Length: 102
Image (cartoon, rainbow, N blue to C red; front, side, top):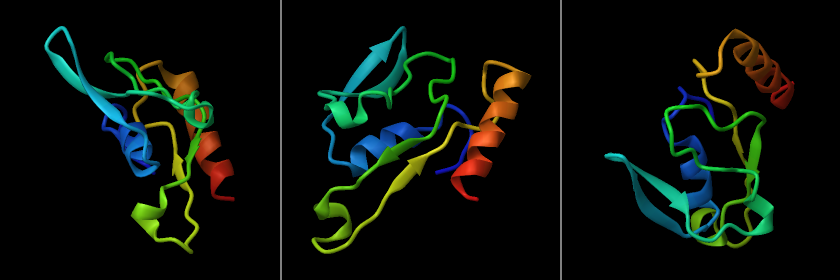
C-alpha cells in the first residue's frame, strides 16, 4: 500500500489480517490500535501521534474471510509519503518502496 503519512495504511493491514482493533483517544485525536497483537504483526505498530511510525515495509497476510479459502494474498504496508522525520527518511522510504517492487 502506498499513500501519505498518517492515513491508515497500517491500520488497514491489521484489519485485513483479522487483528482485533480498538478505538482510542489521544488528546482529542481519535485512532485505532491493535487490541491484541500477535507476534507476526508485533513490529507493525499503529501510530498514535503526529509522527510517522512505519520505517520499513510491513507484510500482512489477510484472513480467509477477506480473500477466500484457497487464495493467497500479501499486503505490503510501505512507509508513507511526506514522512515527518525529514529528508533522510524520505530518501530511505523511497529506497524501500523501490526494493519492494523491483
